[in-house]
Image (cartoon, rainbow, N blue to C red; front, side, top):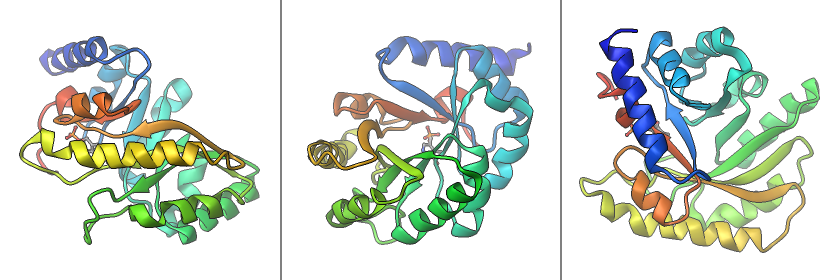
Length: 225
Ligand SMILES: *Cc1c(COP(=O)(O)O)cnc(C)c1O
């Protein structure tokens, strides 16, 4: 132990105490070292999120299945094969082409993967995620794929100075979540709503999030975003 890992340990414990027990904490681990990630696990983190496959692989291979691995960054189709091999949940499915590619790779290795559909709740042209108007159609189509199990929705929401400004985007995502649950589609279980980061997780939980993805508040400031 050193002071860095002590700080991480304290932050993890503090966050785990403040979030309700039914909310899953995903530690957003981009740019963090193996030692930092291990410190978070020691302190009670059981779910880890990565944005980039290349960065995640050596860590996943070292740590293994002691924790649950979430893909939380935009997934390129040429990385889909590696993603289904190594991740337990892919939170960022946002197109039919990506879903089809994931299905093909899952079928090849006879694995079913849990996915969340990412919604571009802020309707921002430069952001990933399916537009709110197109989410029903996409989920209907994905429900025909045998190896993908849709478990809910994920959103980033626009990044604001004031965390409160994200509330309407969380509410809109929650509304889509409720509507889609009532459709009872095959292989679609609206179980997880992944919204909220370091500065917005409290608001996201108030609006129904049961997965929060937190980096800065656990590990400290990142040098590069
Ligand atoms: C980095 C990241 C987070 C965590 O952001 P912080 O502000 O550091 O808590 C959450 N979700 C995604 C998709 C991220 O890339």
